[in-house]
Each structure stands twice: as structure tokens, then as C-alpha cells.
Image (cartoon, rainbow, N blue to C red; front, side):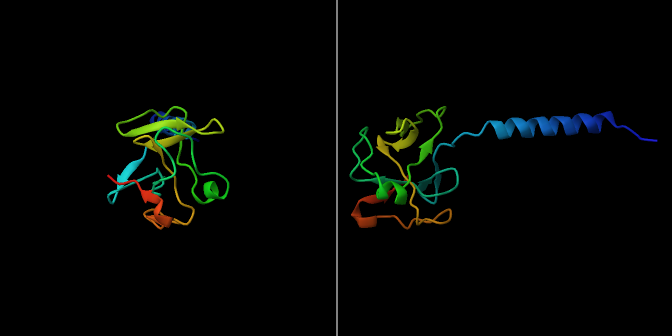
Length: 128
């Protein structure tokens, strides 16, 4: 004979429902501070490029964009303090700090790496 526990069933149903809702609502998190630098939601260091102008288009394309991927924002992300969301050439959204687009660096392989700091004197970590 099976014993049914309605409270257990309700708890399991609620857990699965919350899990499903959480997995559907995936958004890019706004940049956050870590060790005096700003990082993306994965803890990867964010950089600015001296050749970019505030509020202008990205000066990083082709091989540059492969080495320095844009720090993408979700379409629902909004400006917060010094952070804004700007459009990319392909219609996507990218984070910007004080109007300058921000990027990650392909050679940073783990959270906290900052191998791109002062790279060729034109790439700089975004600092607090």
C-alpha cells in the first residue's frame, strides 16, 4: 500500500516550479566590483580601450574583437550610476563605463585574471 504525503508533494512541486522559473529568467548581471576592479557575472575582469570614444562606436573589430570580446548586456539591463548600456553594430547591447564600452580579454582564463591590464598601453582594467 502506498503512503502519500501531500505536504511533500506540494514542496516538491513548488521546488520544481521555482527551478523552472529561475532557468527561464536568465539575464546578464550588471558589472560588479572584485579586488578593486569591475568584473562581469562570471568574475572576468572588464577593460576599456583607449581608442574608443565615450558614447561612440567600438574601435575594436575583427581580430581585436576576438581577443577582446564585448561585455554584453541583456536587452532588459538598464543604466546604473556610471554604468550604461549601449548598442553594438549588430544590434546587441554592451555595457559601458562612464560612456566607454567595456570588454573582457580572451587570455584571462579564470575569474580574477587581469592579463590585459595596460596591454599595449591602450587596454585598462575598469577600477572602482
